[in-house]
Image 1: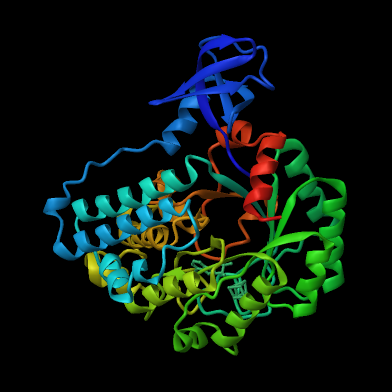
Image 2 (image 1 turned 120 degrees about the vertical axis):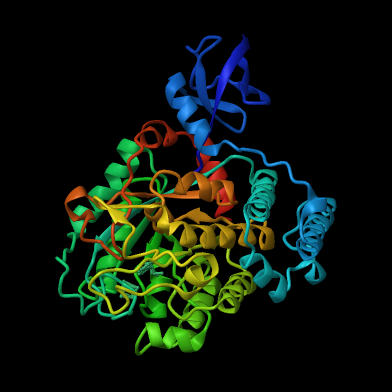
Length: 463
Ligand code: 5AD
Ligand code: SF4
């Protein structure tokens, strides 16, 4: 779903209002807010007001999207960084001349060495510059529209044993749950009807007790009852299943390749092969799914070179959306006490994972993982200006206060909200202390009913 932007009404004439949001001033049709007066705040999408909101809530939404524009003195940057910025900027010029065609040609792509260089950047000034560059590209390409996905984690059973994952089959510490077919449908319908969600992700472990037919029925029934886009995140199932799910009404698929290093992949996902995973991803792309894929950043034994390869893999797959997140050790798994060599070596000797919890809250020792992931987001944005990059829950878990804001300012442009019923939520513990939504303002106002966002979505999902 696409979120609207708040604006303050400066003047009104015949149902048309002049609204201001920071430095921006636009003319909009008062549409659904004909009762609004000068001085009131409204949410608007494109050129139409969709909802009147309070000043406090407007300011809260603005603060999340707000930039702290960083003025960059390019002359002071290291030479290699300057060269990369020059390359990125000249590609943008080429692209805008071609009216934003998808790629500016191979000669403008970042090389692996350049990606590695950016991933290894240190120092406040360099990092601020990288984030600011990516953020300004985000604004240029897609303005301040943020897409919202609601996730229903309907089962925490999984037949697999990925070493990193808290809901792996062998984790006996975990209380398992399965939502019934009716419960899943009802949760989705409520999210759409009561809260205005327009895009829902159905996620679970690889739980074969839901037969292919059951999942298809769930998709069909939700689509029958409400107008919503459904994304599946249910792991590896036969290609026939995915084909039928499209016909049943599914639109997208969240399926990560986790790491593009085949050896690391096999170590972390016993009995699985990277080539099979990539083949499934390619197949889904071919079938017509709106595919989101990506990796984890900061895995044990993962190198900077691996992460650069991951980014290049995403780009070469040509997907419209990324699904990536920082690795967070999870109790009850073989990697519970593992520290990422990358985030540790590079940034400080601080033990980032084991001592960073006070009263159940993650503390700033996670900064190294956060920083690495923010760099990853920014580089992804520079490499793929138009791609959707959600701020995933794992980043919000590492920085519950500001993770979401920082992710957006580093170039991300989509958000994930958890719709799993309260009683199950804590058991979907892929990793420890998983972040749970606290801001209500987004739920109250960010989500609205109205045709505008459907049009935007339909255009985006290339339907
Ligand atoms: N830390 C971060 N992400 C994880 N995932 C699984 N375990 C972890 C972890 N410990 C991610 C995987 C998977 C997605 C559903 O959750 O990338 O694809
Ligand atoms: Fe199962 Fe996915 Fe976790 Fe692996 S990452 S154990 S497949 S839920």
